[in-house]
Amino acid sequence: MGTQTRGRPFLQIPGPTNIPDRVLRAMDRAVIDHRGPEFAALVRGLLPDVRRVFGAADAHPAIFPSSGTGAWEASLVNTLAPGDRVLAFDHGHFATLFAAAARNLGLQVDLLPSDWRRPIPAEDVERALRDGRHRAVLVVHNETSTGVRNDVAAVRAAIDAAGSDALLIVDTVSSLGSMDFRFDEWRVDVALTGSQKGLMLPPGLAILCIGSRALAAGERGGSPRSFFDWRPIIRENEAGFFPYTPATLVLFGLREALDMLFEEGLDQVFARHRRLADVVRAAVDAWGLEIYCADATARSNSLTGVLVPEDVDSGAVLQRARARGLALGVGLGKVKGKLFRIGHLGSLNELETLAIVAGVELALAESGVRVRLGSGSEAAEEALLGRERVAT
Ligand SMILES: Cc1ncc(COP(=O)(O)O)c(C=O)c1O
Picture 1 (cartoon, rainbow, N blue to C red):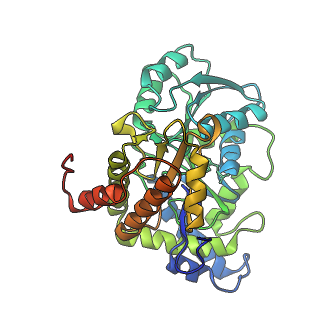
Picture 2: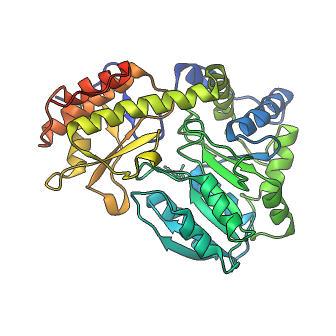
């Protein structure tokens, strides 16, 4: 058994995700002049569609050549000044890294301890904000290290209930384009993402959606900034350009990816993710393993974190899967070795999901986890057929 060299690779880490052939073909072309009319038309056409994916009617999109981490920085330096107090949550690997980015930029971060296995309780948010000192709340919509989805609407309601005027800044890196997100309805001030997950693109873009309050905060102040200043980006993007060299080919890919999402229909895209996530979760249940997210109503539809028995290192499962060409996510931060993550987001269909389940099942069996071969596949197929499993 060696690394598989034929057929499609199964890149089932929770991002970067598999890139559809259509998107690959759209990027397989000559680089064009990014100061010419063809490029300007491309960028101007992207902006309303980017807004639509975020669920925003007239917020300002800003596209940077960067990654999700760059999007964090852009959201912070444009709205907040060193010394400003922000509320963040120790709620997963990425939530704590977002908080660390804020601290590195000179912000005063109140990091609220949270149960990594459940969504952030709205009461905690409200209580923490009551003293009125916070300028922003940093929330990760879908925590990629754990597979826990936060209720952004409930966080918004908690900010309002506390009488706070803090900006709501939401990381949608592993939810946008896979799970329902409603910028306007939830009155989000800044939402941010990267290109490499639900948008089915290679890494390379940091995409923000900026509401009027955040925009005004950036006009009034913010931190010293240069590359991540969103003012020249918004201005130039609206004219179809960039203040510096853009990721030209990834933008062609973005055009194609957005077309694909709209052709399928965003609601159908979200429903497909929900269905495939249910299939994976049915398999995990059948293996007798625990899904890391302990709140069944808050389970991510883009990835599933799976706890392994105490005498098994989750890294061993990953190694076995990798030998068959199946890449799974490692346990990050404090859950390293204890869980592995199955990414089921982006360009994915039912039969691919069954193959992933079978691949995980083999890897588990080979790593010493006591699973009955076929049990996960059977449960997954039953979930696809819409049948309840009959306990045996
Ligand atoms: C929720 C979340 N936020 C931020 C990031 C950081 O993004 P990047 O690695 O593109 O810088 C990631 C990366 O996986 C993520 O999952």
